[in-house]
Image (cartoon, rainbow, N blue to C red; front, side):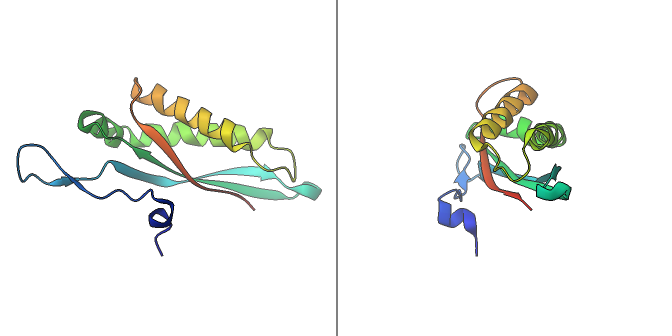
Length: 124
């Protein structure tokens, strides 16, 4: 089952201008980001965050694809910082996490225009 289709995040391919070019999707899924957390009772746990980027602008989309390793590194730092601030047993602050990840996206790319999409956030 494709969860993105249920959430309306699945993007249908668009044709490039110039008549009959290759189809281009504006969505790029990035690998899952993980970080260590302290669970109730002092046990270790893992926080996982699924991310993707929607970029309608073709020029910026190319930059996003080229910057994928830098984006993953920036996201890993943000998620680890959020996990370190998480109290044992408390849920993550998703609004703050999304704002920080979007700021990291804009910083890595050097401009706005790419929209961060967040999937599942899980602490186990």
